[in-house]
Length: 209
Image 1 (cartoon, rainbow, N blue to C red):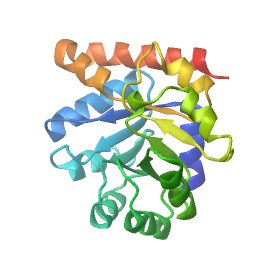
Image 2 (image 1 turned 180 degrees about the vertical axis):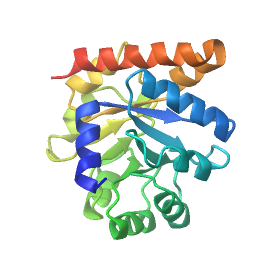
Image 3 (image 1 turned 135 degrees about the horizontal axis):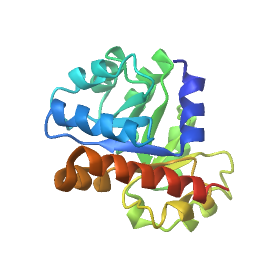
Image 4 (image 1 turned 135 degrees about the vertical axis):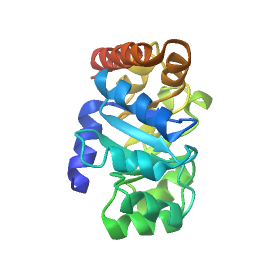
């Protein structure tokens, strides 16, 4: 999958499942359930043990699986070589940006200020992760798009089925969701995650502008 295809998938799908597993097996189970529920974009966090096993499991699947919680260039390269289609971090790293540019892999760094966003854009970042989004209101995106109309923002943290529409209406290219999926798995297993994923997909469709 080339970079343009990954970005197109994110633009059209609107929902990225943020998977934090206590083990590789749990992360694989969570990912399979979200895929069955209709979420085909997965951010596998590097806080998950044995991420290589998980990435390799989905390397040739129809799902678009990327790496999250990537803090440095070494981790970024490891993720890319093991099949990650995109890289996400809680902060902006010039070194991570360089690695992703070298391999033509989209990099979504976490930013909270205009200065951070401009720096990320200057290093070729296609999408900015607004994190933690629960520190902001959806109107923040409209405010940012005043001086930076071309910036693409993906809020993550505090997104739920009640407010996802507000974020998309405000101009978010997509949203990252995770805590609800993990809670669903803990309380109801596979079936609960499938149902939660379906609700997010439906809420995203209703929230599209």
